Every structure is written in structure tokens, then in C-alpha cells.
Image 1 (tube, rainbow, N blue to C red):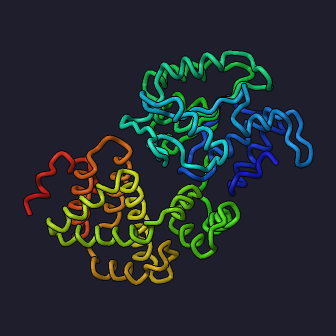
Image 2: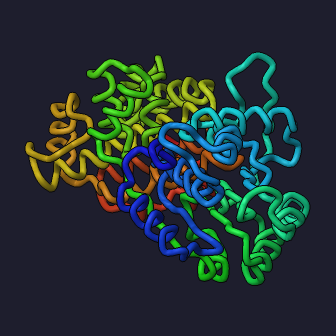
Amino acid sequence: MHWSNIIGQEKVIELLKNSVAAERVAHAYLFHGIDGVGKLATALALARVLQCTGCHDDASCQSCQWALKFRHPDIQVMMPQPSDADPEDVAERLALLSQDEYAIADFIRAPSLNRKNAPKSLKQPFYSIERINLELRNKMIMRPQQGRYRIAIILDIHTINEQAANAFLKLLEEPGPDTVFITLTRRKNLLLPTILSRCQHISFDRLAIDVIAQALQERKNIDAHLAATVANISNGSYSRAVELAENEDLRYDRERILDFLRLAFTQKIGPKMALVEELNQAGRNRIKNLLELLLGWMRDVSLYRTVGENAPIVNQDKQVEIAKFCGNLENADLDAMIRLIEEARLLTESNVNTTLLLINLSSNLGQAMRGPHSGMLFKSLTTPQNDFQA
């Protein structure tokens, strides 16, 4: 019952079940994998199992009921937040996650919740040393109040700053006998090696297309055809598939990425700037979604070039366009194009000027379509004037 809300991830579930049964629970875990594959759902399930006082049949014990509502005194869930975050906004985001562990409710992927007069910060979410000391250390050094353990679930641990990371490291180096840290990340390469070495690493795979499609139908009552379509372009992320299914602009955006590629190749500055301005007005989150769609498209192109018409591409309904791209641009450096888009997508999570980002991405993609390219976008950001000399 504790594990029933997790979509897929059978290997991870089996591993954790065996660890609990053998009483070999690690004092620190690092759950790593892309967003939307169940890291938080699994962390919460593990926390409930460790605190469970004895569920019977379909009836949850008091401890599990508290945990399901994020009210268990010995289970703490933390997310990175801007320095000026509104406490009410933080509380609302945690409440959303308590209702749906797969919801996109963090400050990184949802800078503003979709409600009237919602506060929105332009500052980057992170973990400060003050939060690590006040909200984490001071609680984790205490004995459990109700449960067997003090458990901290820390989302997006890779956003921790250097001072905070060193403070967190001290907690890992001297763990209490009844403490469990469950850290979640999609970018473990950004963490200190010393933190990595003190955690048990558990990798979360991308979810299978049919698993995502079935979950969409069962959990969100989404039409089977739409569920299959968005599952195909979700890149293995259930949360991403939900976001796509609920996005009324999905069809339009898929066409705009093709326009972006065409204008990148033609290098016509006027139409290019008009499209960049249109995309920029749509907002940072929309740009990130467009880049993810573009990345999926380019991966399909690369796969089609290698395998041919039997390639298991994601954008099945765009096979004609993909075939034309491969046929017309035989010299395109596809690997470099993918790296350029990946870098641009990462940069959208910072305070980079998105107009400048899109202009330089377009310029570099145009070059890569004609031949070998370094695949580095950041360097070109230092010389944006080159794109205006056409």
C-alpha cells in the first residue's frame, strides 16, 4: 500500500523494500534521475514505511495518515526557494505536493503558481546556510517525536550553495542513529564529491511510454489518443506528460519549433527577430517547453539518420518532416545541435536574457546545419553582435 502511488520504477521499489526488510536502511540516500519519474513519490513512500506503526488492509495507521498530509512531525520536506520567497507561497506549494507527488510545484519549474496575484520572484531558488542550519540541522539533531526516525526529504539538492553544502556535509559526516536524509536531484554532477560519497545512490530510469500513457488515463482521465501522443514526446517523464496534456498550446508550439529551425537555417534576420520576440513574450517557462520539444525533435532526427524509416522516433506524426530534414541537410552536425539546445535549456533556469539566448541559439544552429560545429553555445553569448551583421 505504501508504494502503490509510484509509477513504474519496479527495480527501485524492490531494492528499497529489501533494504527495509533487512533493516539495512542507509542514513543518506541520493535519488537521481530526470524530473517527473517518481523520485519524490518514492522518497515519501520510503518515509511512510519507515514511520509506519502498522497499517491493516486498506486502512492507514495514524502515522501514515500524517505523512500523507505532510503533517508528520518527524518527516520534513524541503524545497529550494528564492531568498524573498513568501512563506504562504511555500506552504501552498508543499500542500500541492502532498496532494500529488508528481505535481510541478517547485520554484524552479514553476516560478509562479497559476493563481491570481500569485507572488513571483526573479531570484534563483537555492538552499542557504541559514536554512540548512535553522530548518534542517536544528531539527535533525533532535530525537524523533512520534516515529522511529527523523527523516528529511530534500528536493533539488544540487541548488545548494557552497557554504550550505559544507554545513550539510557535516550533518552527513556525523549522522544520528535515527536520522535518514533522502536527497533528490537531476544534476548530481553539481554536488560536492564528499557529499556524493556519503550517500547511497539510487538511479531512477525514464518511464516507458506505455506506462506513462496508462497513468495519464487512470490518474488524469485523459483521452487515450492524447495520452499516447504526449507520452511519446514526454522524454520519459510523467510530470512532463501531464504538463503537455494540459497545455492548450502544444500543437502550436510543435509547429513553432519547426519555424525556428527553418529561420535558423535561412539566417533571415527580420523574420528571425520577429519569431524570437514572439517566443520571448510567451515567458521563460514557455521557452523552456519549446526547447524541450526542439530537443526531442533533434533526437528523433539523429535517430532517423542512423536507423532509417524504421527508427523508433517519438514524433511519429512528423516522420515526413524528419525525413526531409535528414535528406536536405546531409552535412548537419546533429550532435552539436543537440548539445546547443541542451545548453540553452539549462540556461533558461538562470537569469540569462532569453532574447539574447534565442538569437545566439538560432545563429549557432544555423551554422551547425551547414557543417561541423563545436556544440558550445556559451562562448557565442559573449559575441552576440555577430548575428546582427547579416
